[in-house]
Length: 280
Image 1 (cartoon, one colour):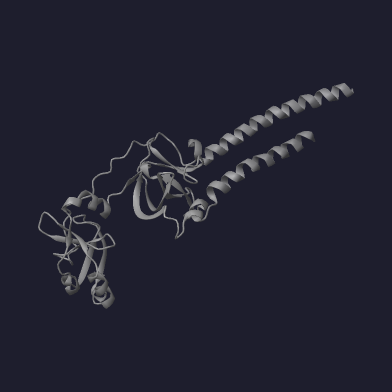
Image 2 (image 1 turned 45 degrees about the vertical axis):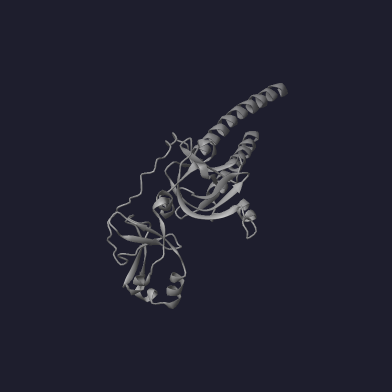
């Protein structure tokens, strides 16, 4: 009887240990972060909107995703080379942190964790901002007419001049819209002249148009994105704190509880046997 009660108690303890792991790691339906929701607001100048893609590029081969800036609580880790979108950054005590979403593995549908990573542990994916930084000395302000854009059948937008990456296309119906025409003419544009004499202008959305040939979707690649130089990946650091996956943690806990159970049953069995002899 004693052994049966003790086994039931240990089984309850086993579920007490295991269920919180599934609750904490798997049952997060949408990415939320209390620190971000508390800080973000129109009066908070420390939050910056930064819609760019970044490679994970941590010093130890992985990036630690923390529950909040400067926290010691790691909610996940991501191996170098993984690309993720950063939408907000936050200056916390002089260090820049980014909001980072991590997909929970092993789910039939997408679930995400939301945390914070040091921006120093990320590397920007080459984009139009990278292009402008690299070719800053060759850019100039375009002061001519853009009427040729509205005479074209369509206007092709590119990630950057010579990228070969088309981001969107404006059709004739949009180009004849008076609001679009007015908006387009109200801006000054950074401009770039490529090696083949084509002139490009950048719209405020950081997308480029080849002013010399605005409808051509087949402009050859002349400025490909450079290969990213990443720090070496870690050796097996997983997506959970401490470098252990959830199944491994469960196996360790079950094995530990089994050993403890065997030891305690043996102790109680000896004690019960001794008490039985004494009563005889």
